[in-house]
Length: 405
Length: 135
Image (cartoon, rainbow over the protein chains, first blue to last red):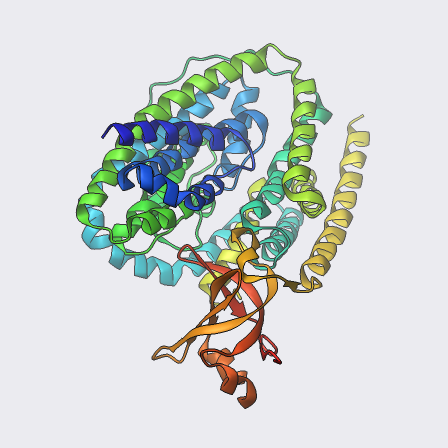
């Protein structure tokens, strides 16, 4: 039992690291764990090892909104938080933005666990229906996104950005340019992070005084939407939380309050996705994430008692994840307030370019340069930035239509 | 000032359009002109997922399931790896190649590294994905 608790703490530390550092994902650490698995299992229990992986996965989904919202450096799971979150940071409400994602994550963790008695009999059936229609749902979302642009010229630019982002996604994900675990980092940073930073530098904003007060509203609808979307995402292959978040974004109207509810929802999607990708081992007998594949490899046969253990670790870790995220956010925001934000933005830009160079080399820089150009088209044409999510949606659509090679 | 800003935005839009078009063309060229890397089986790891490689090894096991898909285990001195020949691809192989796909035979497989349920496998490319090695 003591080794399980110790490994949960190690998992929490690792999840904090992977969440904070752009470009490093849970799967990177999972591969390292699998490479030293014989050593781990000869000294520690199986439960301790899987507790580490589960704790790391859950904590990562909370912490990774911090670099997205505060630094403009998202990963594929947190990318849609960047724009509403950054907007709130510029309004002096950066802490509230991160708190909203934490609220979504905690709500999703509890709701996902409460929904288990329903999930056990119904989700396998629901899964097969949603899977059959997923391509068409995503196509409809793309068409709706184009339709909601306000002029013919903007709709044309939307189509262009969707085509270019989709082509980029096909090249990056369906062909080999870089190892898959690194391929998305330069693409997403270029589509969303770098253009935001460049625009920021150009407009020379001063980061306003940040407030740590927040509304006590629970945003129950956001929690429910995020959790449900995340659960389905966790069960479906090739659908990431970003695609689900995009569906939610388009289902919500563009009122001020809905930006907050949207942040709650995507906080929920990410956490529910990670949790149900693990639960999928028991619910549908298939792993759905790098972490769940590792758990399957370690456990072998997966029974009901193992499933209950997994639920326990998820719930225990959630409290730590929320506390760590809020504590780190508070400290980082206090640090950001006291510096020259324009200089800080330039430093972040240089850091991201250096990180892309170190992790992915000249090919990653080429991807980042191309994706930055596409991201800038969206900004200068005055269209929704989320059209660039075609980077992930188009390859997903092709997969579900059976056209992905 | 406002008009100058608008001109700058229009100019930046054109530059972004041009650069993104060139970038996509270059990326497509880079991704499709890479020759397969010749590696030993033991060198294949998760970083190679999606990469086109060429490996040479001995067939240590072969199994055909009810759908006609062929599951072959290839080994060399450095390790072993699975190769999956789907029935549609197997039908396109010529008789000479099909005949040499038996346990103990030496073959060269050129294909993409894929990850399936936590394990690596090589999916031969169509056409020349599987060749009998000359002894």
